[in-house]
Amino acid sequence: MAQLSPQSLLALDRAHVWHPYGPMPGTATPYVVESASGVRLRLAEPVAGHRELVDGMSSWWAAIHGYGHPVLDEAVRDQLGRMSHVMFGGLTHEPAVRLAATLVEITPEPLRHVFLADSGSVAVEVAMKMCLQYWQSVGRPAKRRLLTWRGGYHGDTFHPMSVCDPEGGMHQLWGGVLPRQLFAGEPPAGFDAPVDEAYATELADLIERHADELAAVIVEPVVQGAGGMRFHSPGYLRLLRRLCDEHGVLLVFDEIATGFGRTGELFAAGHAGVSPDVMCLGKALTGGYLTMAATLCTGEIADGISRGEVPVLAHGPTFMGNPLAAAVANASIGLLLGQDWQVGVKRVEAGLTAGLAPAAEVPGVADVRVLGGIGVVQLDHPVDMAAATAAAAREGVWLRPFRDLIYTMPPYVTGDEDLARIGAAVTAAAVAG
Ligand SMILES: *Cc1c(COP(=O)(O)O)cnc(C)c1O
Image (cartoon, rainbow, N blue to C red):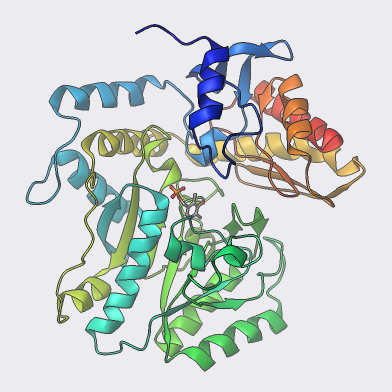
């Protein structure tokens, strides 16, 4: 097949291809990526003199080991030699079974059962379905609403959208369509901040007052990602665990962004020392190679569902348990746990802390914060995305700012010099944006 020139590729792209959260036809010109290796994206044409950009985004927080990692490449090739896919209804295979067993082993104790889905949004759908079906099965069908706090993000399909932040999300557009969930205020900011008593009372009142109709509380633990890159105290997770136990409400942690070491603990629940009843994983699960997500639940939830009038979990994606994705997920988890990953994430944290410090002096910057492998510069105004992206590219770095946020979640393997570069690029983007 003939290769497209970058110009004709971009013309076809603009004419036919939707991009995330984009208009049609597209209005911004994306960079054409030819290949990726280590922490670098190789472009078809240079941007500001750079043919390669250091990836400050890990491809939306997934590529924790970088690109073209020999161990991960080999896992995919090896699995490809056996089979790339077979249906999961009536059949099973080692990559998926090993992955499920590993996830049960490395997540908090009461999580015992694994549903392998094909994207994070679907994993959240399945989590919600598990919770609603559990209460239905045990004779409490009125418990079918969810509670969350503002500022969250849980995916783009309809039920996950209903628990995304009502202002930052798409609620205005879908007011009449989305199920009406319950919202507490945003969790008070600051990983190290003490638990705010007034906010704790707000959570307690909401859960107590609505316990009869609440199936579950769903939150992103410690870090709210796409909803605003905000950090909160693990104390609120301990509080939610206690309140949910007291009032017979299930607790769901969406760890799709935070899982696999990103916040400095293997799972963010580890900062609080509590376990949810349901946990969602995705993004870094396959090291950014293939699309796969997982929903884990306790034995109690699975038993409840299985004792119900409809004793099955009625969900089964075509590509459930995909062997290629499962094989590379197994390899990625092995790679992570086979090294001193906590030291690696601490090194990234130190590099980002030093690299982002100058941004605090930039006029228009409201806050600079770092936790684990996450570095955030928040402006006091909406970012000029084109100007900020171009400024980062001039420094040789790929960043994708949004709203009032310029942030980075680099691969854990990013070297110290490249971390310094990312720091300079985030600062340059803050100046330009
Ligand atoms: C990205 C994300 C999702 C959605 O995952 P997709 O794979 O994009 O569907 C859900 N929850 C959180 C916390 C996420 O960061």
